[in-house]
Length: 320
Image (cartoon, rainbow, N blue to C red):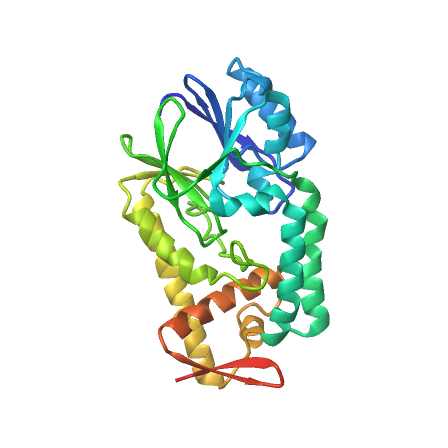
C-alpha cells in the first residue's frame, strides 16, 4: 500500500518500540498509536508532521488489541482531533476502563494461581506488579465495534479478522487485494507472542484458554489471502503463513517437552512445571510464565494426555 507509513513509537516496555501505521488516504487513519507517554506523543506528532499532517488532522484510530503499548495514546489523539475509534467488540470493555479490567484480573487470578501451586505471597506479587504500568494508558471509548469479517473503509478496504489468543478482541486488518495484513501482536517476525491469561470477555469469574484459542487463530490467519504481515513490533513479515507455521511448531514442541517432563517426574503442579522450565524467572515474569505453562497444559488436557487431580485446593497434572 503506497499510502501507508510506519512510525516506530517508543514504549517503556522490554518489547521496545511499537509500530504505528499511518494511512494517508481520503481520511487520515492511524493504527495503534502507542502508549500514553510524552515521548510517544512527541514521536507520533513528529512523524505526522514529516508527512505534512498534525495530530489534529487524524480522522480515525484503529486498535488491533487492548494492550497499553498499542492503544494507550489513542484517547489523547481523539482529544486533539475528534477522531473516530474502531476496535473489536471484545476489546471495548477493557479499553473503556482499563483500571477496572486490571482490578478484575487481579481479583480473579490471585486465588486461581494458588490453585495452580503458586505460593500465596508470590501469587500476590505476580498480580500486583503490573500496577506500575497502568499509568501508560487512558480510557478509550470505541465508536465502532467490529465483528469478524467486517470491512473498514479508510480509502481502501480493510477486513477485520478476529484473532483472539494474545488478547481478547485481537484483530488483524487485512487488505486482500494487496495481499497484506496488519497483524498487531498476533504474528510477529522476531518473537513468539505470549498468549496471556485474562478474564474472558464479558465475565469477571472465568479465564480465557488463551493458548488453544491463539493456535486456532493462527490457523485462521493462515486461511486468509495475505502473504505479507506488518506486525505491531519489529520487522515486516515477508512470509506470513510460514511465520505462523513456525510459531505453531514452537508451541507444539513446548507442549511435548512439558508432557515429557511430567512423564519423567510424576504428578506436578503448573508452578512446578514453570520452575523446571524457567528456573531463574524473576517475580516480574511469573504471570507470563504461568500463562505459558497453563496454556500448554490446556493443550495437553484438550488432547486427553493428562489427568488432573486436586488435593487441598491445589491442582496437579499427571501423564495418562
